[in-house]
Image 1: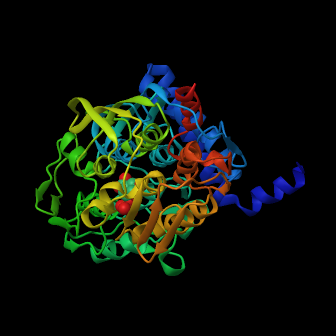
Image 2: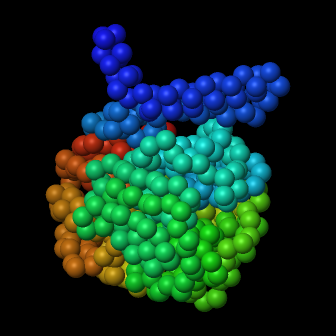
Length: 503
Ligand code: S3P
């Protein structure tokens, strides 16, 4: 553009421009030296970051998330009722474990190989965050990721705010980790994440000495001031949240002394298991997990099991679609995540566990599920809730097809997920003619009566879109799901997989 304008800009901003040119020259010198000496590791880092940076900037500019969207968000999914599901499938990798594999792999010493990594937007947001902080990460390619760990003290200041898309897990876990770094960070997200409560991590982290600023009412963006000395503490969580627990344990890796987190009910324990897998000691006594600083993480190999939260859609699909029989392979059945299986069985679903084994510290099995003509209602409450928290939307669909009453209680956490999942499930199932009512902390569903298709808005919540794609199998008329592309968050190939199994 205008040369006179650039002349003025460069002279007016002399110091800043010189600083950037020096940094740029430094980078070029380092690349030159790497070529000269044949330092392949350095070159791989530069070229991986360069490609990803280019993709990253174009996505931030478009305010899109990370997957090269095969779906645009204005995708409309038209679902026909009926059909039978058969065959076998390995659904994508566990979202919670995928996030943690990138985090701990980055903080480890040495090179960590991950297989079965979930190439969905949420886990890719975490991956991008660590690239922003200077970690060389190759992949993902067909679920394989290679992470060149930098050690607990090797992260670098990111060049700008870290954009986390839709991912609450990324933001909450990263808060704990970043509170202990020597540099400042800003964490931002999309419209949904920008409404989610962050005080649940900011408050206890501040008690440990962190300096964290939030927008009004504890919402993102978060500004995390680096260079603080954290002190371990004993914390009783007011809500059952694995994200809060994990955030504090990650801060505890850096805090003086011990950090002990007590939970009111068991929540997913992937952080504790994976820390141990990286050789970092974690003590668990009853409902309290404790870490102390001063140890290190050593690179390892991680095999991510298939996500039970994604398998849940097919467990319900095969249970309610006449004549179905499906084999879901290598699904994670960690007891802190298997509430869905217990509920399906309590309702009379036909599910058999085959080939149970341990895969890198996480129990897995193949799940054989067959159509059941007469399911019955059940009560879902108390300590069961955290073990199936993400499955409640699809459980509500199962309950709509089951005879009698299903009561869901103590599930108020569902109001602060990617959307208010309690309200949306009640409204949209009502629109399909299901009789149910919402309560303060759950819903009461009178199932087993015929219902029809409807036009459903996903509200850009991946689990809402997938739940209604499955509900439509049992409806009497077609269903139209608006903004259906959001499945990219946790299960980009969901519609293709559903179509293949129905064929
Ligand atoms: C997650 C914990 C749960 C869950 C989320 C993933 C995790 O959230 O809903 O999808 O990976 O730790 P809460 O800790 O907020 O219950």
